[in-house]
Image (cartoon, rainbow, N blue to C red; front, side, top):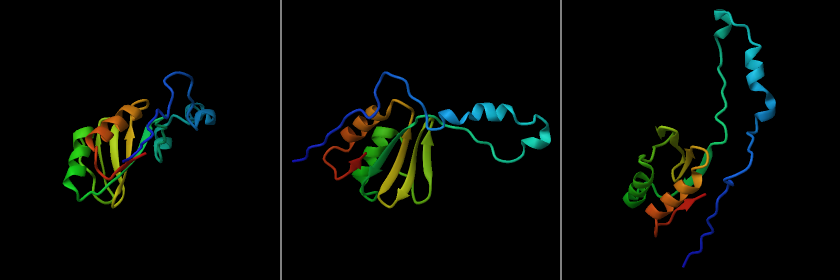
Length: 126
């Protein structure tokens, strides 16, 4: 018998700030020169407050891979790769571990969907 405590990590209401909120990156970007020669280099942008889930399981198990595909519509990526569909991406972290990035606020629903699709299997969704 297993007992899994599942609860929302992020409240539905309230004000949220990203870790870079106080950095003033938008103000710094406006101070940059506008000539074409200064546009070369690195472009930075913040993807604020995305949902992150860690998924662990046996990639060689067709039931696990099928359940992930059923829940996410994504195939499990192989070593050092990622797969994406819209704002959702799944990145390989190790032979039995993946990082799932989903739009802000949808992580609880995605976790529930994964748990339903992988019910009865030896997996972890955190």
